[in-house]
Image (cartoon, rainbow, N blue to C red; front, side, top):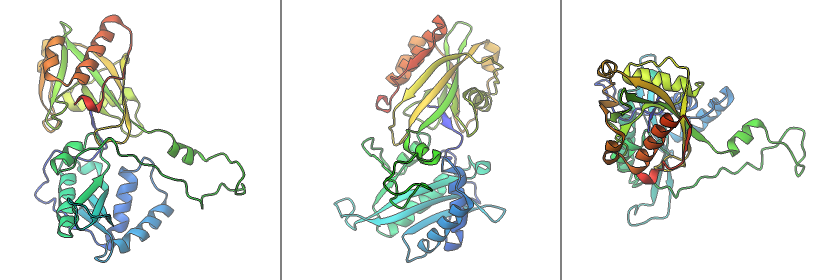
Length: 345
């Protein structure tokens, strides 16, 4: 899968000065602002930021149920944070103390990503929680961050479900209790399915042999098309062009030609569906392929092979997707792919 630019950095190691420290109540507002800016789908209003900060501050004390680790920024703010909330559960053989923790927030400012901040704060948080006899942990992870959490001992569970029930105190202005009402756009938006969007390019050499790049962070999906996950405010074509330039140094000029739309249901620890657009990147000359410059934090090899030779190097679902895209290029008929699923890994 292409990697998200807004997800937490989970591959590089922290710089020498990136030292996590335990958060204190005075850090509550900064943590809430990081969550609002870089975790939530819609930023909080100033009223809600202050309300959440007032709620969190006392919980960050020694007597509270919240623990967090942060990395300080140079401007007096914080660059990254990981927040866990401790709660009691019925004990079991693997968690005899009956204490669990939900990793509620992991966030890194975009200008300091790729420095291993997420790894540093999450590791510090988990180490500390273990000293408090917490032995059961849970979190929601993006597909891109999942390798980090697996390294730290987490395992995905596609059986998990989540529902948010509307508050009985929530009322629509001007409508009496019991009367039918039209939900606000915000409430309606919360009720509909969510999806992560990505876009990428299908390149071949002049002999129509597919080109792919080798991931350094995703052993389950080692060979990938060039692309990534959409940033806020982007259109799919803009995402594909940006990611392609960042990952290879190539900037396709267009016009856009869509080869395939790819759908995948939730899974692999990620609670949302994913929807992708595969654009035709065209045929590259030998010189263009040799001139590709990879980002070593993401990929370590460019390879061009006949389509059938890719089969042994990829999960079945990834190969099915590649085959469908190649056929779409050959026939001129856009493909719709539903076969790519987490279970194929």
